[in-house]
Length: 84
Image 1: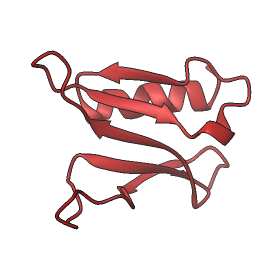
Image 2 (image 1 turned 90 degrees about the horizontal axis):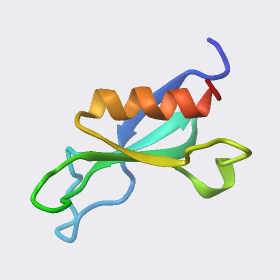
Image 3 (image 1 turned 60 degrees about the vertical axis):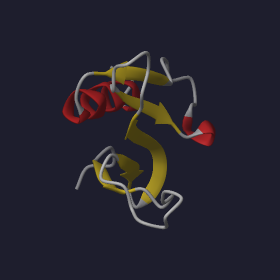
């Protein structure tokens, strides 16, 4: 398995009811949480936001962004993660 292989798992943060959300994911690299991808409400829209965890910025830009789909958010995250 290559070092930059990224996976999603349901976020370790739950909603107020204590249930996991199906629109909130931790991004893992080599088993370590390196960011999150989750759905947000912005001006009546519900895009997905991706963000690198603070300690994993290391000269990567951008460190966050909005995308229309979860798949597009993951692709944008991977592009920044791999510094493409």
